[in-house]
Length: 254
Image (cartoon, rainbow, N blue to C red; front, side):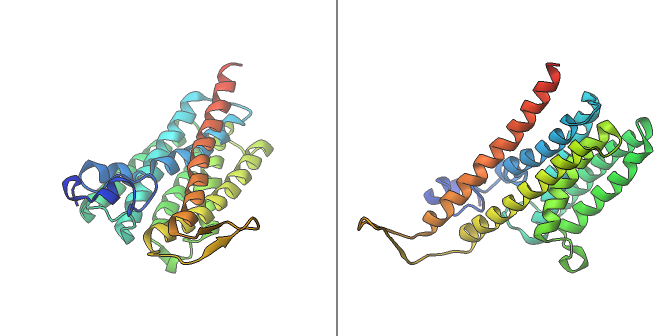
């Protein structure tokens, strides 16, 4: 569907598959595919893990961020769209697979370079990362790795631990604490986003009324239920990257 054929409701955000989705068609499908608010959110975990390390290296952190931008921001989302078309994009399957392959290869190459130039202990993290991208998003092994817990581990805990390890080359208490926080933040994200997606993509109508003690009432609609959930997701997608940026800026001022 091109912009010219899109109805006014979609132009206002109604009928779109996510609160950050652009109207469907052309280059806009590729922008939506990146899930930018969520990608930046999870890149924030990489930066926070690095920021609490006892030894901080800007170049290592930037490479870790680049690797996750490729693996999560592009490859994982391309495979997710390839498997189930949740965004209903017009991107051909062959293009999605090519994007995933090239991006995941690039992310792995960055990790292998780190293993060769920094420490071979980085290599197992690369292997786990590649496995998680493929197993989670293609729902391999009967979807065993496509659960709420694995979402939080793969896209919350894991990025934080990698950002931390890339700098400290060991697991420190501060890094473990950030990784645990990233896990629970990701669980909250998962809970909210599942409800938001259900209301956006599946719900046609809702019936009911809120009756207040003061005698006033308000109809319960899909928008009534969806709006606070998406507002919370939007706020969190701003908060985590800003928190990470603040932590890095604090390091820079030392």
